[in-house]
Length: 430
Image 1 (cartoon, rainbow, N blue to C red):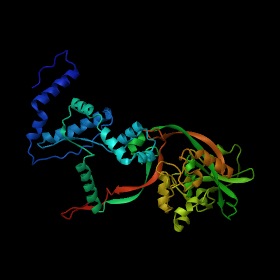
Image 2 (cartoon, one colour):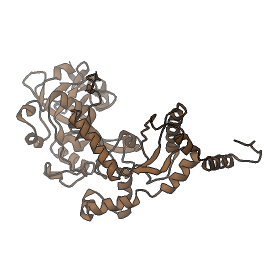
Image 3 (spheres, rainbow, N blue to C red):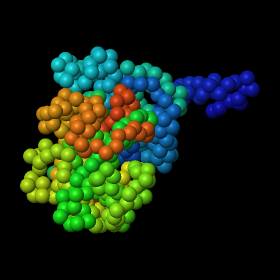
Image 4 (cartoon, rainbow, N blue to C red):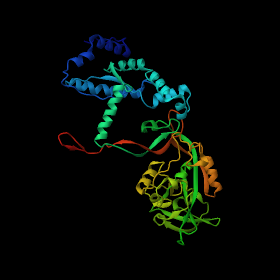
């Protein structure tokens, strides 16, 4: 079948010769026709987007996807392989949004969702011809003529059918989860997309004063210093957490007394006047004066009874900060988990574009990060800021727009992947 390779023949020439031979001999078609239809092997392939050109990642995954069907074909199975195109999601929406010069969801709605969707449909298969050339050059055997598109009606209906089967089996439920969210695109991103956008940025490093409400002599007329790099989340503060086994110093300065982790005292005070000490466990249970009570109206009385207290947490670090952590359950994974553990409720005052709503009227219309400076200035005027600085750290940005992401609790649908399922024959599997 193969002739001897000539010395002057290049690798690309060899590839083209083999591909031409396969075409002439109809090798792929014969590999299917020679296997009985009664011996099928179904191969589910995650289709690529055709809004961009193939890259190394596609070539690697595509090669693996070619190996598996070839293996089962050699085992005597009939393995049909229709190539698919993913037509939904951020890639096409972001591309069209940029082409039309639409700044956000509000402008998309002003244009008309129907018009926006139709434009997306018209551009979603932009690079199909280049994809076909590349996939063929890889030597991958797939059927482009009998392919599918996720925007096909029958495909979408099949997805809804699967969802309904899961729903009827009690495997679908609704709940909250912290997700990386792009305010510019008004949508959460996958972990894969999030990991593509890390870069260094400057953020506020803010240490705040929280007066402790206690009649105990040791804690009366004292405050606890709390550190944050997200001032915009302060209106969602529901509690403070400390390390129960950590040592804390009470430092007196200018007639005021502040609790701070012993190992962080030198970072905040040049010549600390330490007047007392305690374990974090002694601070646990103490009430403190909140920065704001705006969120009180958005939780139940039972939840509110647990707000503005100090709780223990094993994740408190002394690598930076004060050893006391501001906790806003609507923002951040550890915050959310602690809030769920204590049933504190949620308070998210941002809209879909990450701007403050009338839940916090003072900053209505300002984006979360944009509001930082105004929020810091306001709490300085209230006498609640102990120290202000800047921190440079690696932070995830939306890799399509460059806008910093927000980790926020979003209500969404989930599939119970670990729930027991009973088959028709009565066998229960986990």
